[in-house]
Length: 140
Image (cartoon, rainbow, N blue to C red; front, side, top):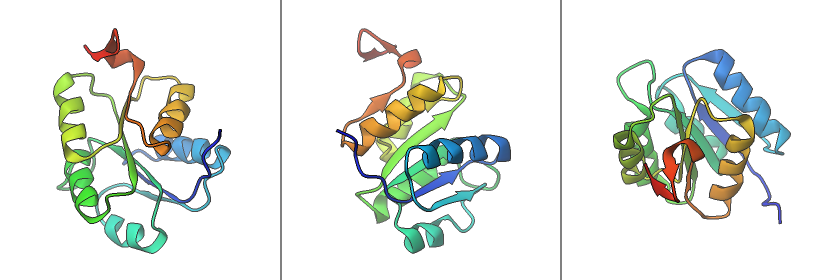
């Protein structure tokens, strides 16, 4: 059963990547999608559109990283689903993301279908870790 989609926020400092993620979300039926390249303006945007989903990169321009932003968002909003997307494959980043309140973790070298699967999984209330980081259903 497909979950009804609402609004989304993308925090990614590379325009090409952010626009590609936006196209995926639009194709999945998300309504309003805001893109930010850093923490600047994010919290006002979140308050304005009340997103159901956020896609957040770890490495961003500015003072805050995606893990810190995730923690701040989670403190203010327990319901939004947050997926961290990053180039980092180290278990430290996965652990930090989930401790900060992320619902999912996907590497940027994952296929686009895996991003779609991650989105659908977290929207159903489940956690998601991309296949590249799992060994026998445990974190490698």
